[in-house]
Each structure stands twice: as C-alpha cells, then as structure tokens.
Length: 316
Picture 1 (spheres, one colour):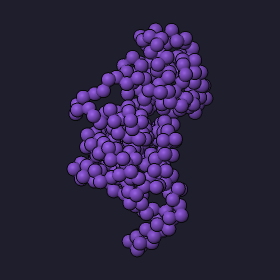
Picture 2: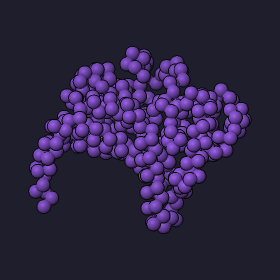
Picture 3: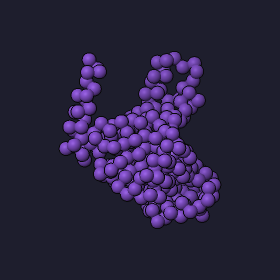
Picture 4: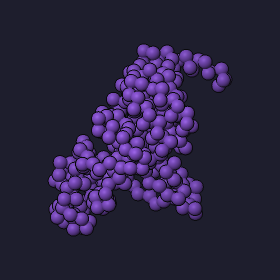
C-alpha cells in the first residue's frame, strides 16, 4: 500500500474502518514446497469461505489436485469464484496454476520429504516428547517464515536501515524482547538504535523522527495499539516505517511502507502465541541484521570487533 492510499486511514476517526478494499494484488506464485507454508500464513486473514478452500488444499493437496474448480467448490461448500479468488490470493493467476502446485506439493510429500505431523503438547507428555514436538514446531515455523518472507521487501528495509540516521523499534511483551534483540545487534555494528517498550516513551520518540529515519513495529497480531500508535506517528513524520507481523492485512500495516510477514505458527494451551510467534520474528530480525551488516561491512566490522574487545574481559 502506498503512502497516498495509507493517508486515507490516517484521517479516519478511532474505531472506524474504511470502505472494503479491493482484493489484494496477487503475490508472487509460491513454489510447491512453499505452498503449504503460504496457506498456513495467509489463511487466518482470509474470509471464512476462502479459508475453507485454503484449509482444504493444505489438508489434502493430492485429493484437491484431482478436482476441477467446480469439484473443489462443491467439496468446500463455496463457489467457483471463491476458489479462483483464493488461488489468486495465494499468488496464482487462476485455479489451474494452484492445481499444478497442489500436484507438486502432493508429490513432494509422498517422496518422504514432507514435514511429519505431530499432535499438540499435553500435560501428560513425557519431557522427551515435549522436546521433540517443540523442536518440530520450531523448525516448521522457521521454514514457513522463510518460505513466505518477501525478499524484495526485506531488501528495501535493509537498504533503508543501513542508511538510517536513527532506528526506533517498537514492541511489547514477547515482541518487546525481539525488539531489544534487534536494537542490540544494530548498536554493536555502530548504528543508532533504540527499543521502546513503554508506549508513552515510544510515541514521544516517534514524533521526533523524520525522513531518513527508520521505525520498526513488531506485533504478531498486527493489532497491538501500543505498537501501532508510535508507528503511525513515525509514518506521519516521514520516517520509513516497517511492520514485522503475522497478519499482513492487519491494522499495523496501514502505516507501514514495508511489511515483513512471519509464520502464523500453531498455538496450543501449553504453547501460546508469545512462544510460537517469537521464533519467526527472530528469524526476520536476524535476516535484517545480517543484511545491514553486509551493506555496512566497512564500518560494521570494526564496530563489532571493538564491542567484542570492550566486553572480552567480562567473559574471562
């Protein structure tokens, strides 16, 4: 979404919503191996009928690949138009492209390379099973995030951050810990970076930003008001704004020049969102940091060496 379009959101009174937006532009087509990850990431933000189609193709790619558009519509209790819209949201020009990808995904899974399925952790699970299930879920979250991460958006964020006068990062709760992780890394390569967990301090600092600065909001739900408010202030003052979120169509993206999407990992009673989202966020933060370190290597290398030297005596 461009800044001109986003300004319409800024003028809305609190609690109001704009007229329904047109369907999003198709994303880049997902490779068969990445299709399942794309479905898992995007399904929660789809309409109810489109979600039924997405969940059906994710659950049974081989069976759905054998169906015509009419057959899949009947199977999911939707319409042919809904099936086609779902295919386009997933990045395909139409159902035929999605059907071919489903066939590829089915073959990929049948070859034995597909992910094994696990059940949720229960209170009676032996600790060894807990370790195995968490390790599986963490790997799946990382793979899904990597598959869905828009590298063109990431490249733009890396460039803006490497050239920034100052970087402000907003996050609360578990996302606040990720915000601190990012700023600590940036500080060690010589960038001016601040993590703001206090919402009042975040807004106070955001209104001081200007063009040439970067503001990053980290929120898995994309609806955290204490994160959206400072990002909006930074956006209105011309800073380059970034949202790291698991919901690419959520409220926080209204004020983001760039959106980096994380996996919407499975949650359970013993593995809440604060755990499942953190893994994907940390991967995105690490990718951003390494990209910036590459761009600024001439200064980042000496800065990092200096920080190691300054702290070395504390580890002896």
